[in-house]
Figure 1 (tube, rainbow, N blue to C red):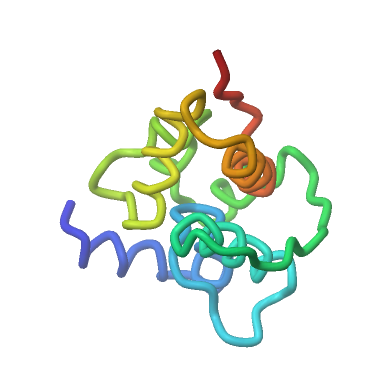
Figure 2: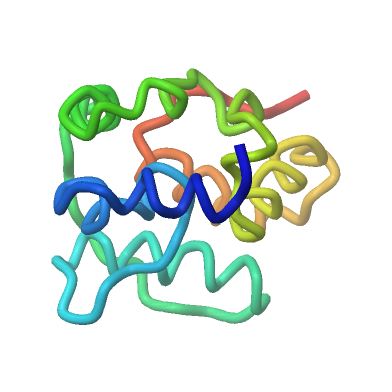
Length: 129
C-alpha cells in the first residue's frame, strides 16, 4: 500500500479524519477538540525538544479499539506503536517508535513525555529496563 493510498483510506470517513492523530499521529485539524490538540502538543514536544502544554483529558482505555472499529481500519489495531506496519507510519509515528525502542536510554524528562503520549494514545505498553 502506498502512502497516498493510505492517506486516502485513513481520511475516508469523518471519524478517521478527525481522530487521525490517534491512529498514526497524523495532522490534527484546525478547531479540533482539545484532547486532539493535547496529542499534537505531546508529539511536538518530542519532535521539537521543547515544552508544550499538557492538555489534560481522560478517555476510556478502550477508546483506541472503538475508534479503529468505527473507522473500519483494522490495520491500526496494534497493542504497541512498534507493531504498526511501516507503510502506515507517519514521520511522527516513526519518531515515537524510535523513542520507545531506546526508552531506557532517554533522559527521565523525555521518558515522562513518551509515557504521557503513549497513555494519551490509549497504549498500555510500557518501555523500561
